[in-house]
Length: 316
Image 1: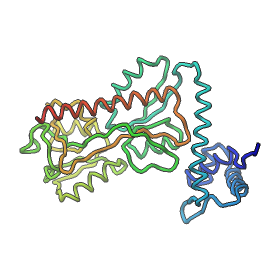
Image 2: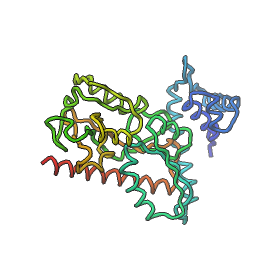
Image 3: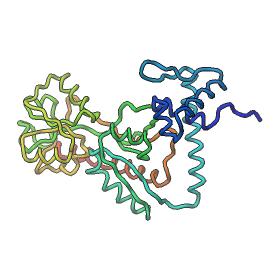
Image 4: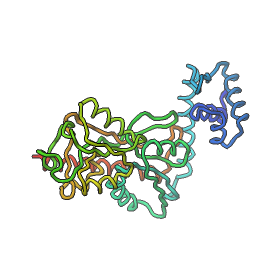
């Protein structure tokens, strides 16, 4: 039997160096020394007879051979970890601690529903939730602090993989009568925000650039703009003032009947937002985490579907 030239240790070192873009950070991640990481990568290149990494001015790039080893190496490590987990979980019930993250757009509506279903299937499971915006959550998943995170879709750092769970729609949230000529649940063009005072998320939120780009493209001039990180605080301020915001329908689910706040789906142009579950590419989620992601995905899908049905009924 021919023995492979690539060792698991060298493969892990090579993948870590590329993903961290640093030998020192890769060494910290792998609990090794910087010189040890360098030796592992160099020996791997010598065994394969080709360079895998090319040092550029500020980062490492993959050679054609490096691209093959990186992609296939991730798949190999993921498969090995999946085998280990399958053996460990044989005949066992969900247990342990699951650390995960969610964006604020989903914690107000999706989280409670998902946990109700999850708790019916599990006992003795401890959960730890981090509620932050996507950039911070991606960094935490990459660092191994979180097993997975639910975030809006966007460009992912090397080393992460994603699964689509739902497509949401953006809408204008305002105090009753703030958008003159448009009742609750009436579709509005983006131009309806002309002269309004708009609350926007911080630059760390991937939605910020999309909102500003859409406003610019459609020539919408605002009376004022305020940056605010807290979505729940944003929702409360809107009910008490003449500020408005563009928010995903999921977080507005509790306001779909109208009352303290009115909702108006944006129709020209339609603005959508995809939700994804992100994890490290080479990792396999634990049995408990897989159950939890299933309930989160189902709750997200149900709330979006319920919202769309309510939107059609109220706008008819």
